[in-house]
Length: 188
Image 1: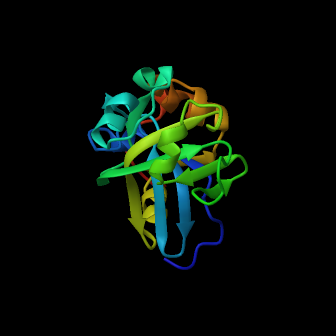
Image 2: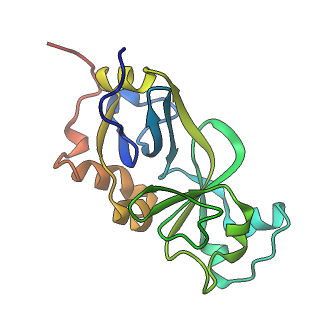
Image 3: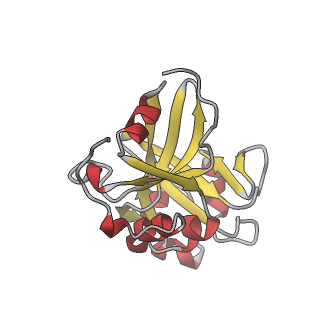
């Protein structure tokens, strides 16, 4: 494959039924990077069996705000599942976060975990363990093979949509009922 002409950074990848039975079954991925070297993103709709309060205890971070017990942690992808990554909507500190898109920032800093839920916290955040990645040309090939639909990300779907509704909500951004897409791949 040649050089990419349009980056999908800040877009959703929506798994098509062609990925049924795979790790990415019904996944929605927020792409944090996409260039000629490859792509990196976070699955935003696969909750782990752990809540934020449990994660904080495991990494010895004190944060006694009330919402930590009800904040789910997500499985961001199959790579480095012991690495925590946070997507959030407002920079609490530009030293610890990188801007991905308008009103979306990425951080791997434990300092951000200390302030979640406090008055210094971003309004919205999503915490993932691990990430998803593709080598040069790999994602483009998977898109051509009908494994993924793509659309510009929407912060309401990213931060406010329940994980079990996210796959359908992301596809609806394209005007598609994802249930009507065949799991058979073919090209004319």
